Image (cartoon, rainbow, N blue to C red; front, side):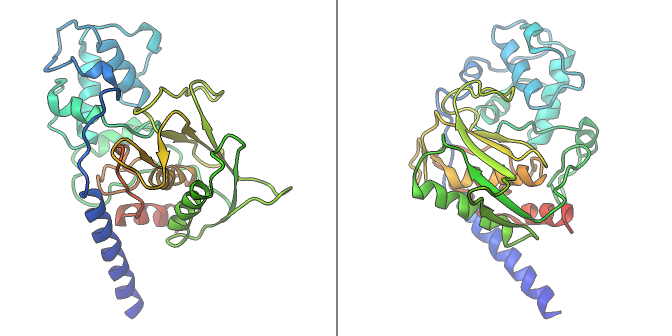
Length: 297
C-alpha cells in the first residue's frame, strides 16, 4: 500500500511541475510558421480560395483524410472532404467542431509541431471523438513494439558537436528510462546501434523532407526502425529564448515515437503534437507515463 501511494505522489508531482512549465510561456505564432494560413479566415464549404490546396496538403500529411489522395492533385475548392478533415482536426485538438477554417483552428495549425501524423488509424480517431475524460495517450496501428529493453543510440556525424546537445539527449532518454523498463546508452565503437539520431535540411532520403525554420521541428519512426530526424535549419539550443527551440523538449517527444507512442490529445503531455519556440516541456506527464507503461506493462 505504501508503494502505491508513493507512486501516486510521484505522478502528482510530475503533473504539477509539467503544468506549471507548460503554462509559463504563451506561444505567439511566428510569421514564417505555415505562412499560407495567415490570409485564410472564416472559410467554409462551397468557397474557392487560394491557399486551400495547402490546407488540404497539411491535413493529408497529418492523417486527417479518410482516403488521402495524392497531394499533387489537391485544389483550392472547399469540398465535403476538406470539411470532414477539418472536423477531425478540430476534434483531435478539442476545438469547436465547426468544419469551418476559423480563427481558432488557424491559430492551432500555425503552431510548429512534430512531423509525425496525428492519426495513423482513422478508426481509433473516430472512436475518440467524445473522449474528453480519461487517458489521451495513443498508439499507432498494429502497435509496433521493441522486443528488448536495452537500446543503444548513435549520434550521426551531422549532429551538432556540442556537449550540451549530447547532454540534452541523454537527459531526454533518462526521462523515459526512469518510468519504464527501458535502459539506454550511447553505442560504443563496433556496438550494434538501435536508434540513429541525425540533423538534416530539406529532402534527406526518407520521403519526409523538412520545410525550413519554424514549421516541423522533427520526425521519428516507430519501432523497430530507430531513425530520429531533426530539422537542422531550426535555431536549436538547450536554454531557449523566444525564437529558439529547446532540443531536449523535442528529443523527449521524439523518443516517445521511437518507443511506440503516437500523439496524445492531452495538451500537458510531452506527446502532444505541437510545441512553440521558446517553450520548455521536458517532464513526462501522467498521460505519457500511462502510455509507456500500458504499451510495455
